[in-house]
Length: 366
Image 1 (cartoon, rainbow, N blue to C red):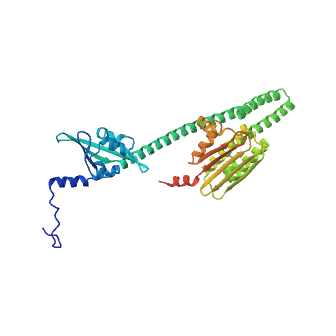
Image 2 (image 1 turned 180 degrees about the vertical axis):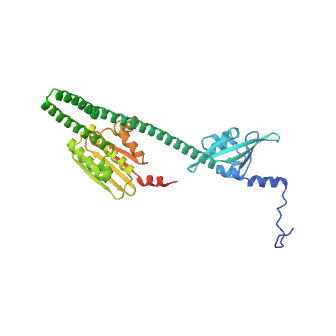
Image 3 (image 1 turned 120 degrees about the vertical axis):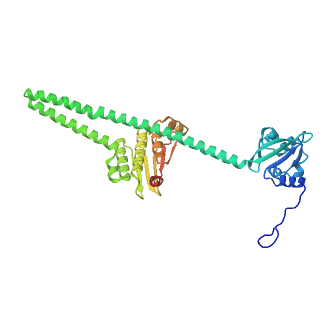
């Protein structure tokens, strides 16, 4: 039969069956090895020789166990005919082999091994396993974070309830009793004493109103709402310095607008850090740095106080003690990073990086 250009197609050479079989074995992508009853290599194709980095003359006629010991690895190659698996180490990488064995109907019977390099699939499997473990760890971290966040919310609600009960509610209840007393005084004609009592009630109610304003300010500082993060941080540091009589150096700048939720998180981190300084540091000087640029908000609060053993930071974070856990959780809400530097007697510095452009991009995704 002629081709379209009139030329006859080339025919495959007429090979003898044995030669043709040998050609097929040599061309196979898998390794093919024939072993005799004494486990000596009778034949081995080029693919297997490449797997073990040996020439055919170095393989054929060798005892399988001796060849495996020479090739090295973890010793599993020697057991490959029985186990069907082996690992070879060399050139900075591991080669994973899998084999199927068949009994050759020769006299005496031999063994035929068909060996495949499965390194790529093993690496892919290990990668998938590693990614799955990573996702499991992240899911566990998320679960712990949600649980701790819920606990924090409940603790904050309890604190607010206590503040309301111990402050305004007690004050208003006392004012109600005082008004009853005023009523009795007026009924008895003691107008002057009643007027004095009304004056005291007015002052008490004024103090309770101021307490409520402070409570509302702590929940959502008006300055943060009205003018943004930088003025609110400066006001917070000024109030801390006045109350604690500790000088606070403030460096706060934002080159671009910061999302409102990130501003709140940043403000709470500074607030919590200053609270820690007040409770534990016995510091004589504090510095606060807030810088917003390139889509990230950098926050650092440092003091020259007592400090602590940095080896205990993980323990503090794991147990959720002090304010470190709270600051870390707020940082993680923005997929940011939180670090702590400290040493006994050498002060403490906490730093949080909040990448707000990532959050903005995530919000716009469908």
